[in-house]
Length: 288
Image 1 (cartoon, rainbow, N blue to C red):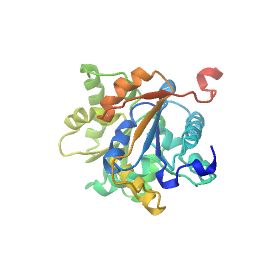
Image 2: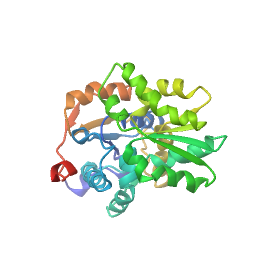
Image 3: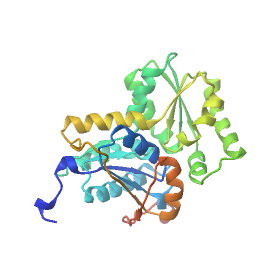
């Protein structure tokens, strides 16, 4: 494509990606907070779940996805996956700074951690997240950087995201699973809980009932949307249009399954979903 045909930087879309459909809860907040922007969302459903992947796998997956979104001329990248943010954010930021535009990368960990520190009244914060996110220590570092006197109680939830991704309606097994993960947080008497996976807002009513109405539950979408808005404005990259922008979807797996489940996460119509092929990356399963 000739350089003259390329869209002006501020008219380019914002790229958003996740391991599956969970990141659509973040995209929902972006669409509400920044309705004039265009968005491209990529769900790596063929390699879902990310929660028990190694750091090396997550970084390789994330860099490959970033290249795909760069090829679609995205002006900013949102990592709407807590596991990928925890493992790959520094590598992604280095790679994006090498691009002509110098693309900013926004993760979902730090904004949520800062909000939790601001919200807690007792200094006891809980975290529900995938094993990869908990093992990375990313939330612990972000919380303690903001306030070293705050205690963070982390609970790895290995099967919660796959259960949610598996579909609806939720049954007694889902409720029992949620209750079991909330038990150590109730015992620790936390007053604020970070949902460290973008799938978890779908079971927020169950979580709130189990934790108690006095516990504040934080999701990553709203905090990330505020940071995206500030990043675009700081670089004069916010879209100039007054009307609503467009949003489109890519996935690496079955498009029909993505569309059916994704509509419930996004709470808006998805429309067309395009399947994309990403470079094959050796994994623990493949290497044996």
